[in-house]
Length: 188
Image (cartoon, rainbow, N blue to C red; front, side, top):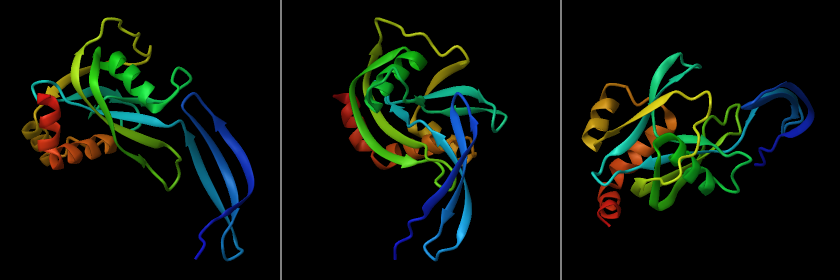
């Protein structure tokens, strides 16, 4: 069966710095009309950055939407400074951790909330981390710190519900299921 919905009308409701919101009227496969609210967001990246001590870097920062401080892998949106998600990985790793990676590989790509948003997250693994020689400026509105965590420490955070960010969850489960592979990359 073809589930494609035909967009009959689009009405932009909001245009912001991070998202745009539109209301769509769509024709369903059965011919009936329905309303859809769609949030448009630039593609984004997340980085499972593993240090030479075989520890993952997590960023601690305030997030307004859930109104709390979160623990997340380094991440950011692809913007006009970047020609590809890989460029964004290199830039965000520098901005958020002041590190560069000898080895970067794509893990997966996934939508964060298909029910209303088109935001596509590209997840990468970064190893062989060393300090950068040229620090890029952090975003003016970012206040963050980072710490490193062993897989056992992440297991404990997960058990206590403290890894509640979706991209960080995917990165955690990837590392947990590919621990030998990641350790081999770290040990070079």
